Image: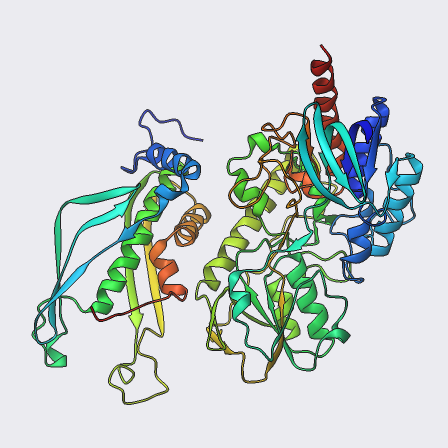
Length: 414
Length: 186
């Protein structure tokens, strides 16, 4: 049985950032990875996907973007390269092709069953990602037989879809990106829209992520956010990593010919029924966007940047067609595929320690699993700040978690 | 920013709501509620519904008193008009729910309300319920709610108030989303 002080599970950006922090503190550890470094990016992302965050923001502990296109957005292949290079650069002790089957409490820490061996560690850091499983709603079971169902984890490009129309369910970044791509490929798309987050790609000449960072929004701490549950479940903003369009919002999809309908409520006898709440859902998103733009403008004035930046402006409200249908017959042959862009969730089912709530999510306090001292989690949305949702959030998150872990080791020694 | 001696008071006990939210998150079974009404036929299209008890917080609950509602059709339907029509009760429910939401959200956001009036209209072509045109649905084609709100807040804040009240409204959800309905004969 191998003994080590810390086991990090997952060699993505979060696990590697943690490895670097542990190395800085001379804490011996191993990083277990089910596949290769950056496995999810290699195997579970569609190739046209680009990061929502600009390159200059894609930072990791001890590493900043040094390429020639700081304002660009990394494609999946670039993300794989960046994370793989980082693993080499920091000399992370990664064991690839080592799937963890179970983690249990042990007398002096934890027992980790991985591949065909058992490891013992005083501390464990879960960094297996936030998007291992597609979170599909129960209504997905009621899609009539001839219509195929697909999740973004299995989606690669429109050529894999059968001829015919596609119902995309969900209007997060994933939903709007795939709705646009699929519609442009010649499959007529209907997009079912529930609660969503509308933001422009750029505002007053700067990337929206520049504004989110500059105004301090991304730095808001988990223990200062009014409604943390809501913040952690917020859909990703309707953005695409491209400079080609100012907006990839519902208005831009409507202009392309995508049919926008309300939230998918149920499918009964093959008939999909959509919510009549679409106007309010869109009004809420417009109001929320404008609240942030107001905050951005106020911040710019306070920071004395009004002379340097283009003047403030507002975007047209989201157009909702008064003839928006409330029903769609999935048996008519018009729709041949339903794509469930209804979010993702982590997979921690192999964790054999009672630290999960009734929805299966790990209870933690900013990454510290307080019910199991020595256990930590990283790489989840709004884990410690709003930036935790994005790659660069791992810079400060790994620092805080490593610091807590270090203290925990010290307290156990006494 | 204005400084006032009087605290914001819309008559909503927000602290109780926030406490309930916290307590019920810890004990989700207590959050299961069952709302009930019973309806007795009088004559013709006239019926009387009563509402008194409901289940929630893990136990049987009682209203302060039993409420009665006469339901009928109007005289132009050749009825006696002993009460509001069922569809008007739906409008009453929606307007009441949204208005309660406006007051609660305003309290939570420290907005003093001076007056709130909602006018609500539901458009319907009755060829549907008469069975005269299979292409016309029985229910409303559309519902329009118009809020007139006098409050210490900007127009944008008031719009946000109204949007949030829809987001958190039970009746708005019932009306805009499909609901499973099971009708049995005892």
